[in-house]
Amino acid sequence: MATSAVRSAPASQVAKGEPRIRVRGLGKRYGTLEVFRNIDFDVGEREIVAIVGPSGCGKTTLLRCIDGLLPHDAGEIRVGDERVTEPIAGVAMVFQHFGLFPWKTVFENVAYGLRMAGAPKSEIERRVPEFIKLVGLSGFESAFPYQMSGGMQQRCGLARALAVEPNVLLMDEPFAAVDAQTREILQFELLHIWEQRPTAMIFVTHSIEEAVLLGHRVIVLKGRPSSIHETITIDLPNPRTRDTLREPRFAELREQVWGTLMREAREAEFHLER
Ligand SMILES: Nc1ncnc2c1ncn2[C@@H]1O[C@H](COP(=O)(O)OP(=O)(O)O)[C@@H](O)[C@H]1O
Ligand SMILES: [Mg+2]
Image (tube, rainbow, N blue to C red):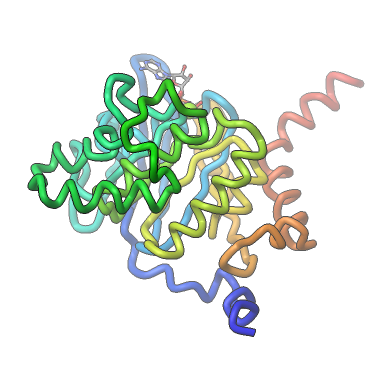
């Protein structure tokens, strides 16, 4: 069966391509608060790297540095051949709280990035409906964000990011604000869309399960200031499906990430109990 042949390809055999993102010795502070230091990692041009870490460890800050929205204080970030010092073309972000313009319709929200990039009207008329369809929002072109559920708003946020045909997608806890069932649907839809249009993707989440399900590798950030404590290769078959959630290896990897993330917290609790 063709599908099982595809599913049996381990993640290690997935062509990640050349590194698209290179982060070296990255450090960031807000005044006296040092958020993270010595962050080093690469993301391949067709690779999903999930980043997990406790709230406040600097996940959003890291993504905003990579997006060029925030200056970093040490080290460097490269996207392709470009050194990031300001927002660069080809990088798109999906925000936790959707980041839509409340006064714009779905069509206009999705068109935003294309208009900013100076795309001609004919191209906007052609591409926007294509991406609205890709995320399953056809028929809602004239709706405003307040008329839609959280899941629909995030589909719109995703379409807006995809419409500029980025080669880097930065996702900041994109499904944290939707209900559990919608979240699961969106996770698999995202994987499906990614299979059709693979990019370098950084997926930030505080959900260990989500990180293991989506990531080809999982980076665990922790400490104050935070740094990378472990990078775990997720050697599950691709593409990931609902069956992935039932595989014993999925549970093992989830436990491994949990162990890395929670070791200190568990030890602290243990000492308190004694
Ligand atoms: N603009 C800012 N100015 C000062 N401190 C900030 C700012 N943004 C975030 N912080 C602080 O930096 C730390 C990391 O924040 P953030 O990147 O939002 O973490 P995460 O996304 O992992 O929850 C937190 O302690 C937060 O309070
Ligand atoms: Mg955050």
